[in-house]
Length: 96
Image (cartoon, rainbow, N blue to C red; front, top):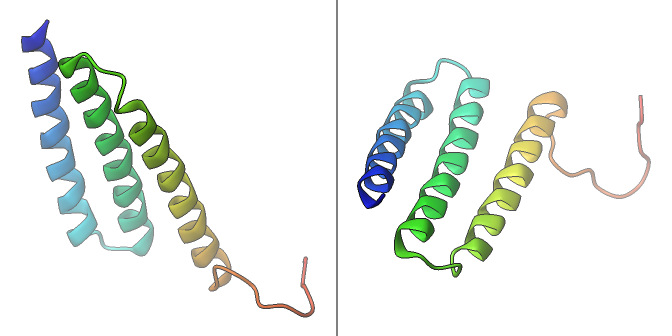
């Protein structure tokens, strides 16, 4: 079982390298954001596999935190691409 978990960690590491290539060489900002989201999810999976390998539940909180941060970051980047700003200042809102 440990051999399979180590193989999974190696494959996830290779996937992170591929996503890093897309992050730096991506032709558009959308490609880079998708690569950044992919790296976050792969890191989440690597920590989960590491927790299984070490037979501990201590990493579950970290997995949840990374998942939440990855989601918020992707949503913020998507909003930036759509509107050009992440947060609106006070005053009038334009809901069009």
